[in-house]
Image 1 (cartoon, rainbow, N blue to C red):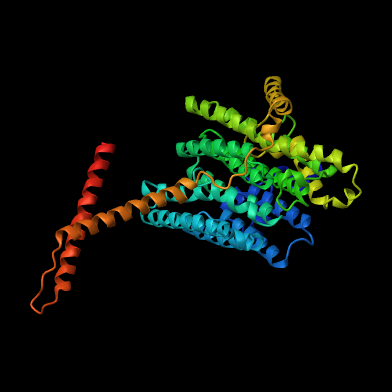
Image 2: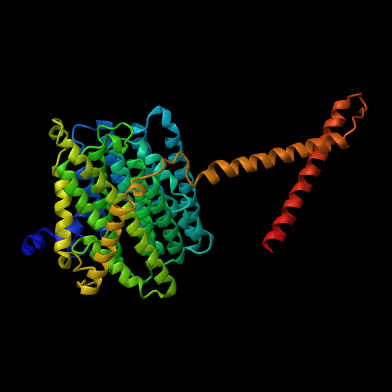
Length: 516
């Protein structure tokens, strides 16, 4: 088996250095850039995930939607092959454009707000990226404002808190297979660029912890399956940001983590689609079970929860081992990483396993359950790939510069943590973890609705105050030609300007007193 893997180059799948995975002549012939070579694990994961999705959707996607998926994939790989900040910003604009088209094909006319939400958020992120890139072009490095603007644009694309709601608001409104494609690319590409440019930055630790906590809590509370899966995407990206924020984790391990995340999240979305087909509202009342989807769900959940023997356990163990050497704050971040990982494992993974297995008992009495089986080839392929990656981890990690050795302590601790989580889910928390709410608003309500209303109300108050003062001050007088309105208008404008300056002065004094 090792000889087959070596011949195919599969053992270099997660290698940070792809020099051994692709021979020199192949690289020269393909013209691969250094950036794409360093991101080869993620590129291969994108390719395999898209191939599986297209095979799974065979006959169920319109040709235009397939074209949008391919263009979205091409723009994502284009960004992976770039190293210049300006071209990366342009690449993200193309990604946003094709993602918008993909959302538009699946978004009904009544939910046009989701389309506009995605467009407005990525317009802001694109502006931030371009401003940061222009500052970088002048200074030659990311410092000060250029770093702040560019990192903010990347964090928005990575669905970092508090700009995370665009994922949970827009992804569920897309088509059955559009959500699978959307979940794979934008956030992972943004995380990859953050890894290249800002690896080890403490800001990523703070952003990652808040994002992971936000995603875990909302995924735990959300009842709608597609929305819960979207919150799971946000939570998993938060865990990636925490791992990138650790300065001691090697580049190859982080690339392996992101590439593996693409595979098992794609498989989870396939499972979620398999158990929600037939329910227009995607609620558990319309779920049915498929034997293959249950097996695929178990494999994906074990990788997500880092069960010993899976590839997820190997990669996350390497990340957490490096985090333990990052000081006190690294230890705190490590605990947040563990807790949020278990919450996502229970709130999303175990929920899918529970719902599919419970519906399986019901489907025995139905005659149409066999006809409900989806194409099993793509699922089986991803399951086999994840199993092989877990079994041949030494070959997979041989060129990352890291070695992994199973120790009884690590295995026992992880099995105990997962067992306690499963026991709590079955005994006492099952009904709560199956979802309690359907959120029509999110944390973004504060800055999308509340703050604009406050600012609008304050501005209306200022205008009203200006009008009152102008009416008190102005007394109409006739000019030389007897035009009283000219003099009154002039005095009214002068009084309004004076009142506005007075209000701005008061606001400035208040801000100085508050912050000083």
